[in-house]
Structure formats: C-alpha cells, structure tokens
Image (cartoon, rainbow, N blue to C red):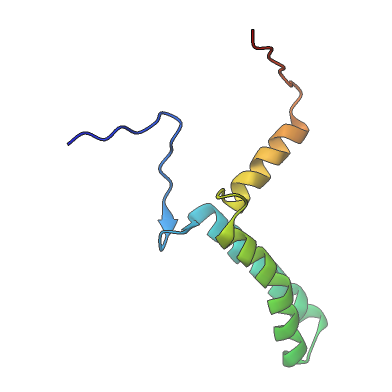
Amino acid sequence: MKFIIPQNYSFKNKLFGFIPYSTLIFNVIWDFVIFSILNLFLDNWNIKIFLLISLAFPITLLSILGLNGEPFIDVLKYVLKYIFSTKIYLFKKY
C-alpha cells in the first residue's frame, strides 16, 4: 500500500495528538512568568489563583484551538517573519 503525501506537509510531534511541543513549552514558560510575578506582589492565594487562571487560560485556549487549524506559535512566527522581513516579493502571474 502506497501513501501519497504532499511535499509541503510536515510531520510535527504533538502531546496527546493535539498540542505541539513548541506551543506547550511556550505555555509553560508563560505560566511560570505569570506565577513568579504574582508571587512577588500578592499575598492572598485566592487573588493569585484568580489572576493566574484569568491570564493563562486565554493563551492556553488559543494554543489548543489554534488559528484556522494552525498552532498559535507558528502563526506568531509567520507574522513576525513578515513584519521584520526586509525583502517582500511580489509575483505577477501571466
């Protein structure tokens, strides 16, 4: 049995089959930074937990769902590459 795989298709390793490892690492770093900042400034655990969930949940949800089927980190890389690219090519099809 032969499978035809397009050349622009790439295999990416994912945790549990739906979240790429690069996105997972970004989420863990983001959550650690938020947790560290909250520990520096707040003493009340109820407020810490509320703020941690409020700040981490949207990023995590966006990472899991993605943007139009693409992982959040990949979309962010594409946008930043486009913004900071010095060469923009325009092609005219005939």
